[in-house]
Length: 238
Image (cartoon, rainbow, N blue to C red; front, side, top):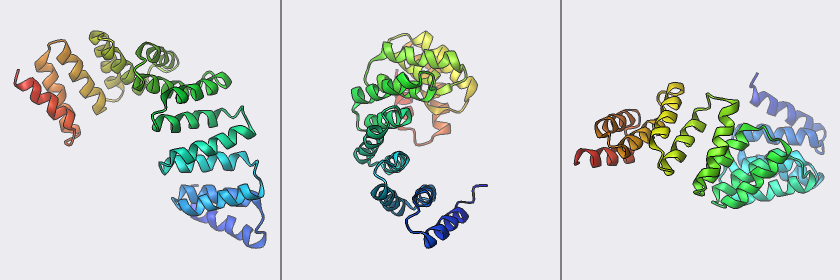
């Protein structure tokens, strides 16, 4: 029903009668987080944890909220707390990996994703983000295996296709990259990063007129796309 304000009132009514009702406190904190009442939500998660330090969901959801607020170190602390309570909580391993990757702690992030995958080997989100982090960490060959694995399960995962194409570009396999960009654009025709990436691959293959067309299309979709203007300018003076 998505009636979060009404839900907040319900949980508030429970807490007027019983200030120590931990389930109501927790659900009220989650609802506050959804409504972007972030500081109030954090205080309520802390109140839950004061009453029950082993409330693993409160640790986890507080971590999610802190991640949303770009407080990555604090989020990692929360996920560590959750994992100390339940080491098999694979979502906490995954979210810790995401927070670590935001801090560019790529090796630590990959270790967290591997922990998550040891528990749930088929989670495509974990596999995808592991691939992205490997790509950012310039481990292109291993990254490629992640994107290929996702595409075995879901051939329409256009972001996996995009990152596979980007990875192939880094390995100087531009023709193969073009095929991946084209597949990504068949699924999501206005994905500007794929359009721009295709332009760069075409440029590397000496197909300058086609590259300019791609940069023009990227600029049309994203008029503030500075890299597309730069690459187009570089083509025009050749």
